[in-house]
Image 1 (spheres, rainbow, N blue to C red):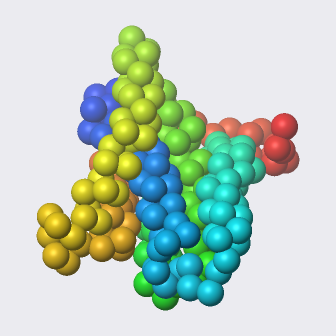
Image 2 (cartoon, rainbow, N blue to C red):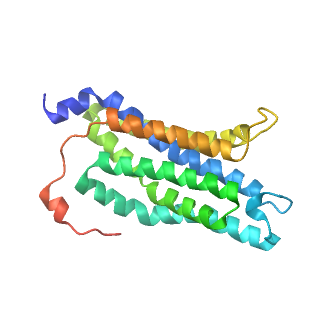
Length: 224
């Protein structure tokens, strides 16, 4: 069986981890926004806001919120071009590992009250959010021509669902009235666990066809 036929035959299995990483990216981004707002609210006594004035809390919240899309803006074209050279799967595994590390750092930031760790976690998360365009490109690679519109639509749906589910999960999984051991770290650690599962699914289910050419590999990286 040729690589292209193998990819088409396995497209549903290969598409599952691709759709999941898109979902996790958008879900994690939307999940953190209300958590960070609650932790940095003027009347909050959370460790991350100790010693900060009200103005400083607003500034930190604004920077932390904007850092993610800014890093995605710079990271997406670079990682996207690298995926053409070293392969979609390798870059997606790197992005999935980056998601795990990012939300582990953010969980530690809330535990220790470290603004620096918040910024590091947000920057890393934004940089590895390039997994979304890479995943959409990979969906095209592994789909039969007549199914490409469907799988691309599913990718966009996964992204949209993530923005709805993320804030809802952040509220549910941090509500101590539901479970006494729930805390701010619970939704973040749940995202880490889901990202670890996604890494394993990418590793074992996603098989990309050979596609990179020597000309592509020699082309210099560009932000244009």
